[in-house]
Image (tube, rainbow, N blue to C red):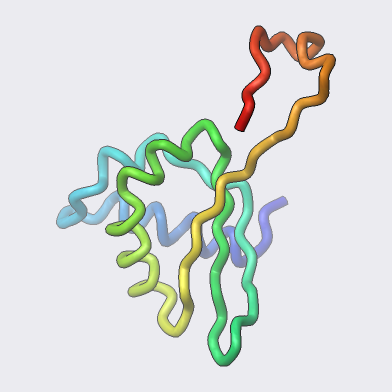
Length: 103
């Protein structure tokens, strides 16, 4: 079940997606989040948003504009994007994958 913070982030992303003035609307359509967490940094809070690795390329394309929009919505918070990578063991073929990613 998503935490209240994750719900809030998802709602903010949805608001950006449906706003008529948004220029990143099309790119946001296929973006999902894994989780979100608050992190204390000196005198401010950082909001860390984890994305699945398969959507990371799309996130990087719109990263600057998306961070700006989210920092407007979550005032007094820094926003950081992180890719959630899954490290596969040597018997990765059981999961139905042909090649094992090296990154």
